[in-house]
Amino acid sequence: MKQWYEALFENYARKYDKECFVQGTVGECDFLEKELGADKSLRILDIGCGTGRHAIELTKRGYHVTGVDLSENQIKRAREKAQEAGMIIDFQTQDARDLPFEGEFDLAIMLCEGGFSLMETDEMNFAILKSATKALSSKGKLIFTTLNGLFPLFHSVSEFYKSAQKEGQSQCKECSFDLMTFRDHNTAVFEDDSGNKRELKCNERYYVPSEITWLLKSLGYKRIDILGAKLGAYSRNDKLTTEDFEMLVVAEK
Image (cartoon, rainbow, N blue to C red; front, side, top):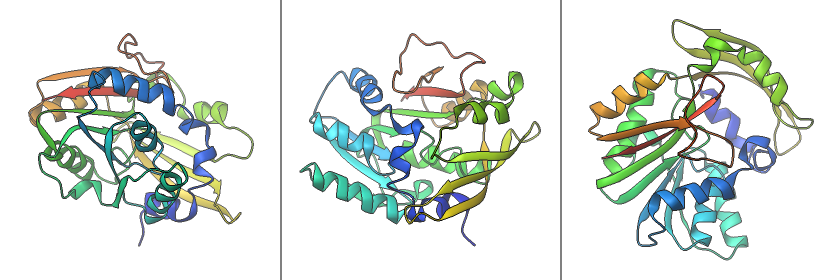
């Protein structure tokens, strides 16, 4: 039986690229460049790369990027887009819980919930962090976004989804947040690339900052910064607040 995140991306690459939450690529890559000190010799691993938007933008800017995703359909689209842009990028179908890399990269990124926090157990989510860490060199850096567990303590997740919905894009309904597990259970309604209306029962894990800090410290990270994640405008000046739906994590070994 396929998990919801596998079923979702079977035929949803072109429509996915039109969703409102994937429109911040250029600004997000500006932040990544700053974090890299614009050093083009550094190697980047894009985990849960989807249709390759960050990998393609960073390659355009002269970086060497490898993109991995669980979905063959997303990887196929990523390769098409790279080809259309006249680029050769190493896109691979891989499971983020068990990546085949060891010490090969200077930076690993997982943006827009690219794997981490979508898994059905906390152990699997931790396996992704572990696997990403193993792929990094001894001085490597991990940058990722995840759902902010402080948000649902102060706001209705259901209301948030309603306010963010746009005509012709995916919708969330029957949303409930479980305080014991910090999981949001909902039904995603979307149209796939063939025009079929689909409904999927989803659940995602929200994390509070102290959990993230502990998980990363246990993996050997020395410096961990947790910030607010503004779509397309990541900044070290944005302190995380209860108003942020997502948090941005920058961890250095």
